[in-house]
Image 1 (cartoon, rainbow, N blue to C red):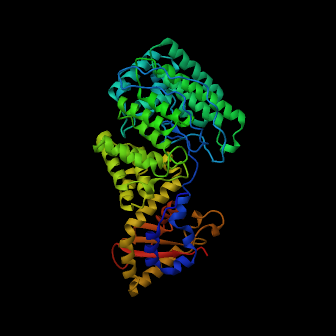
Image 2: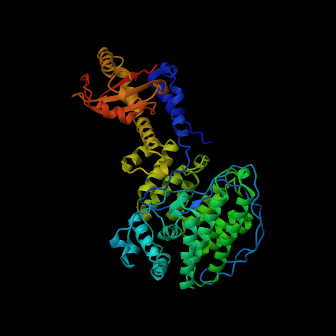
Image 3: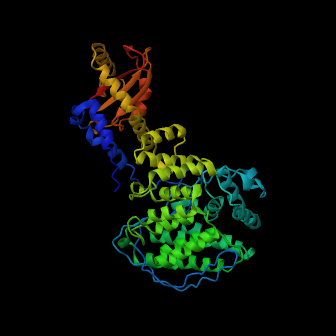
Length: 539
């Protein structure tokens, strides 16, 4: 489990409030404790300004390495030979814990399709829209009406023009998320899969030269395989589940084989092949050769790099550090700002807030920051990517950078990054606290040395009372022994209005306290912009 060190922050707090505060049990509620709360399961996909790439596996029993023939895909434009398909034995259980595939970034929520959209024909505005929710709705409408030619025409534009949403997400990737019903996540039932299979097969029959429905079939067969696999540990997966997993992966493989015979090429084909390499346990040399073919076909399709980095994790087929070493190599190879963007995206995908593993401490934080700044410059900003870099900044304790990013985010936090509003608020408060702590520390120390400062601190303590009986009692629900003693650190203006308030530790119901504070009449301080601390004792 990731262990985030807040030693510097704790030392600063000790210098302000002394060892006595630590004796009241506050060390048990340090920022490290806050960080550990982030280890929640992946939340349901939420609306995001940039749609997500496909789900990636978390931890699964390693399939035995196999040497079945792989498609030799020469550089585009020559057509790819047919993928040879033969039955593979299902992966055998081992003690490694496993999870169902989880998304590295959140997908936009599918919205109800208004009638004026549902009745509309495909037009060029679909190519240019930057509204991801509207895009999902329009693609869903075309799919529901089985307007396969319109979808094919649009997919061709996406491939040739490499159209992206702000924040670098390829629209092509989102198109596949919609037509495979991946956005439904865990809610998809076997009947939903069957309906989608039949529709994609009708599309393939109606458009025999179209690669899109065939790649989509491989995508959905893979999702269906993971549904059979389940979410238990590898040893908990029954023989029948393993059999279904293996059979469905073979269906995905067959669909990719058929797609490889078509003259039309698609970068998502390589993405699905790299996923297949992981599922079947290909040897590293074979998978690396496939990646090289993917790069030759489309070097800007970020998802292929992310997929290969996932393959290189120790829980799969790499050694410790392999994935991030690959990130550095490929970023250097691509070079320039695009290379830095790739480094950021790989690091973000590996260190998503959706698993217990962490790789951020092994990555180059300066390069991650440089990659994000390059991403905004080249592709524009998105709420999701902004939340993502902010999460990473807070996790690496780059509090000044995180504090600036929190300011930009405002109230546009993303559940797919933070998992809950509580965690977002805690991290935001912690960043603000760390940035402003040094100034507050010196001011409080100076003020408490003066007679008027001591007098003002006593007045404020009397006004604030105790959590049990003071103006904030409604903010503390349940047994009070579940809360730590805490310090309220305030900057008070001459007119007694509160200019700033911070809490240590930042695990108290700060939002409620700040709201109640608005109705509390405070004493006028000895000077303007006056820093004072009030110890709130639970026990």
